[in-house]
Structure formats: structure tokens, C-alpha cells
Image 1: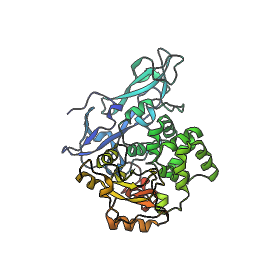
Image 2: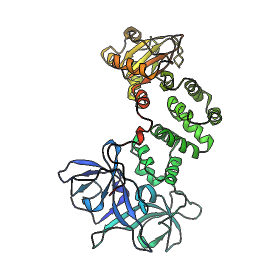
Image 3: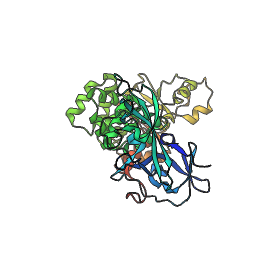
Length: 421
């Protein structure tokens, strides 16, 4: 593979990075540039590469032996594993420049940046020489309309140092295939201004998924930037236990205001979870496990746990209860594990294969006892019942891990966390 003479940087997002032996070492997440005075093109200083544990490191551009839209190959297998920290004077191409509003010199029209291209100069430096923009005709400012043009660097103005509000359509298209946890990590690495702009541009469902993967301090900060009506909509889209954890970080008055704005049927399970003492089964459980009556068939149960939106831990078992099926349910009868469902005839009733030997948790049980019981039974989820034997929720292994790990575990990474060299 050889390096293309002109590389459009947005196309590098997410592509694999290989060492000289052909082993994949990570993926490109951004490109770092430094602006220079006047109309001199910015110099590309390196790549931000994501390696294991979502650690992002800096790879100097001189370490890149070959690159195209399929892969980046390094000329060395030895890299600094220090976490990337953006330094003064550095700009992230994908995180900060895409969607930025500029002005086209010849037409005088405002435009939105959709990509930038780098080329290698005679002195071997890589420079940003061209900019792909979409002109925005009068009356359509901020919308993705208008003529797409590829211009020389000096044919636009207003890119360097702009503090104007940006859209996020192009950046979100780059992030489109990211899992919520990866997108949350990408957001954490953006400057505050850009993080708020990108969060505002996400739809409610996507933002809710991402918020669930962020530390609570970041959740609170982003929620506080949203209009209160939209904040309530995002809370509705979150899992009730995650929404309750987030609301618990807010003052009581603000909690109540948001709960009042939520739809009553969405607010009810969140209110219920807020009642429980922190560090108990009740405080960490989800109130929306898979619940079926005893006369449901094995085929129906398999269809329910097959839903792609169901987290794996909740899909591992079905809780069998008397009506009503919403928590708090009728009397809890027992659990059917998914492996048992796979072994039974599809037409059989799940009431005939219930495992009633596992003692359910109660909401007041502390974390230490929850952990002990899950380890004893080798389970990834356990039912929680109230004093009337009604199912009120289920504690999953990811809930337990969230509470066992340090509060800042999402911010922690192995090794040195100083800036790049």
C-alpha cells in the first residue's frame, strides 16, 4: 500500500491502523493540526489513535508510512502509550473543524466545512491544503443545502480560531456507526463548546443511549445545557434506573420539575427507584425486566428475549409472574433461563419449566449481599421482589459492576496519563 498524494481527513475516521508486521494496533479517531499565521496552510502534526480500553494516544505524522481510505500503516511498532491530551494551539480536525461556518472568498457566501484534505510538501511536512465546503445560500444558513465545492486553503476565510456556533451534521455522519459507549468516549474528548453542540444535535434516543455511558458529572453538565422540556424527553428515553441515578445528582426542586414534565407512565418507575436507599438492590435495579405470565409459550418467551434493543444481561432470563405484567407485578413465580428455553419445545408453556429454587432479592438488600448471591448462583441477573412477593425489578451484573467500580472508572485508563510527546 502507498500513501495517497491527497488524503481527505474525514474519511480516515475509524479506519484500522497497522504496525509494520501487519498487526492491527488501533483505529484512527481524529487528526491533529496546528494553524499558522496568515494564509499559510495548517500543518498536520499527527493522528489520534484509539487502542485497547478505548485509550486514545498521539501518533506523530512522521510515524505514518502509508495511508489511504482503507488503512494506515505505521513505520514502527513502538509508540508512546501516554493518553492524548490536547495542547494549546492544537486543533482536532474531526472534533472541531467539521461543520464550522466559513466564507468563500470568490462568492462571498457563507459555507459549512464538510471535509479537509492534507498533502505532503517538499520538506515532508503534511499540510492541510484543500477544504470541501457546502455553500449556504441566503435564507438557508445552518442547513445542509447548497453547492458542494472543493477549494484551496486560501480561498476561504474564518476557519482558524472561529468561536461561532457550529452545526454537527457532518461530524455525526462520521460518528454514525459508533456504539453508544464509543460515541460517549468521543464526546468526552471534545472541547466543552463542541461537546454541547454535538449533544444538542443528537436525537433524543441516541443522546439518551450516550448519556447512559457517560460519568454522572458529564451527564449533569449536558442535561443542564438542554432546554428543560428536551431534558425531560431525554430522561424519558433513558432506562429508568439510569434516569433515576442522574436525577439523584440534581437538587430536589429540579428533580421534581423534570419529573413533572415527563409523561406520567415514564416518570412513575423513575419515581419508584428514587425512593430506595443508595447502595441497595432497589437503587440499582431496572424496573423493566422481561416479564411473562405462566401460560405464555416457550416460543413467545424466545421472541421477547430476541429483541435487539434488550441488553444481554436482561435477555438471559424471563421472570414468570401473575398479572399484571408491569412492575410491580402480580405474585412472582420464578425464573426461566434462556438456555432452558432453547432446550424446550416451542409450544410448551413456560409455567412448566420455571426455576423456583433461586431466592429473589428484596429492595433493601445491600450491594455486598447482592454480589454474594449472584456469585453463588452464577447469574448475570437476579429478580427483586417486595414484601408482597411482587416483582419490582431485576439487578443485572452491569448494575453491580457500576456500583463496585470507583465512581470515576469511566475516566480512568491504565498507564501514564500525561500529555503526548
